Amino acid sequence: MRLVISRSRWSSDFSRWFDWVLEEAEIYDYGRYPVKGMGVWMPYGFQIRRRVIEILRELHDRRGHEEVLFPILIPESMLKRESEHIKGFEDEVFWVTHGGLEPLDVKLALRPTSETNITYYESLWIKSYKQLPKKYYQIVSVFRYETKATRPLVRVREITTFKEAHTVHSSYEDAERQVLEAIEMYKEFFDSLGIPYIISRRPEWDKFAGALYTIAFDTVMPDGKVMQIGTAHHLGQNFTRVFDFRIHMPDGTMDFPWQTSYGVSDRVIASVISIHGDDRGLVLPYHIAPIQIVIIPIPAGGEEERRSVQEESRRVAARLERAGYRVKVDDREELRPGAKYYYWEARGVPLRIDIGPEEVSSRTYTLVRRDTLEKYKVSEESLEKEVSSILRDLNSNLSSRAWARLKSLVKRARSEQEAEEWAVEKKGILELPWCGNEECARKTEEKLDAKALGTVWPPESAEGESCLCGRRAVAWMRYAKTY
RNA sequence: GGGGCCGUCGUCUAGCCUGGUAGGAUGCAGGGCUUGGGACCCUGUGGUCCCGGGUUCAAAUCCCGGCGGCCCCA
Image 1 (cartoon, rainbow, N blue to C red):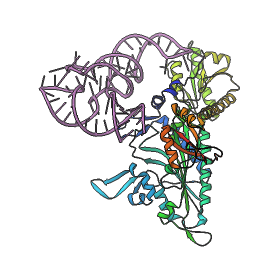
Image 2 (cartoon, helix red, strand yellow):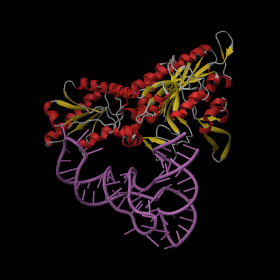
Image 3 (spheres, helix red, strand yellow):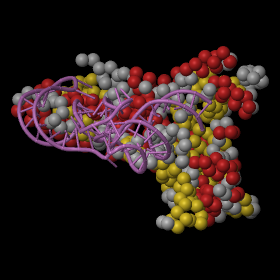
Image 4 (spheres, rainbow, N blue to C red):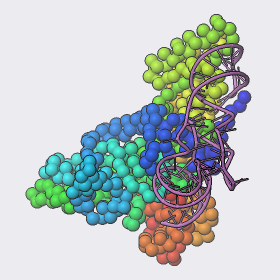
């Protein structure tokens, strides 16, 4: 029997596919909790999440970031200190207004993000340029009172996995260097998960509330819509000024230091699930898979054969565990092998090993990789070598398949006609020459019924091109339907 | 922000229009028979019909409000 992978439901009915896979693979139980926009991480999903978080920790620690943990409640006066910041968030803050039966005299916000309370503490801890640069991060829940339709992991009211980094610097330039480091870190992070991305400088009117500028990572989901998966902000002195956070500078003066912040969220997990999946369910890169190898004993034949299949399965499991893999023998007697194949395929286990009387007598194993469903006959001696090479190949295949898809969905157009052709389907990202005027981009947004993501980053001049308005273009502006 | 659809065992769903015994499938548990791509048979288990109010002799069903989910448009 020849098995082929199919991705028709995955691409044409993505929304339902996504809900289905979260439930079927026991990742995130959404829609039953009696508070809108909140869900429950189930054990299997939690393990995936934990491994993704560990990658983030390792990355930040290695680059000199220190993990901290700030309170979840922020007093109103503190959150409102920076006026642009609060303007950007005020319509989506959850407020704690009572303690028991008593109304509080100071309202407390459930943090939507932590620039304010962290800056306040930095101002207490940091007195001199000699302490800089300083890089903190925390991985916490943040809350946003979403009024639009919510979606599991993508648009929720409790973002349960918010990695926010906050840094302090003695100059504008050093903070800018930090934004570049953040971009390098996120590239490394998304590359390790095989998630393809494009990097844009968000338009002025869509930057983070309180930032000088925002650099964003976006990816394209199976339905062709674009999702923001990471951002890095140069905060300038906006927050340090309002918290009167001044330090001793090398020249003996006192001045406000410069800051950056950058974050990723649950959406990373949503995208790793979505981008690599297929009609059978999840396909997980092996380093984040809770179970990397599942062994299915095929208990055919007589008593004798069945026992030797059992023993061989356990022996192989032990052997692979010694080699460092997370292995599971599915010896449930109530399910037949076929049902187990579907079960583990839905959960995205990267590699399956079938062991039946045939394998035992021929001293071979049958390996089936999840991404392509290809079968390999492997000799007893070469087991570890083959497993390792298949798993590495699976990861790189996931990545290149995803990158190829993303690249095919980024289109550069030069005329209104080409732009209109794109707008028929609106799949992926459209790049157009842009004159630099907000009004012009706004009009194009309206015309295309798409959102301006920002300009190509690193900056690429659009010399010789002209904007749709006829003026000389200065940059490439990206447009897309977004989540 | 605007519009539409929907909420019944863990899950999917019938019943609702035309008010009167909540039924099926799947899952789960036990047993039998099987086991190389979702087997089958028997038995059992499982429901505050989303919540609150109203109408009625009687509400899953009709009406109002709330909560929650999905889809489309902006």
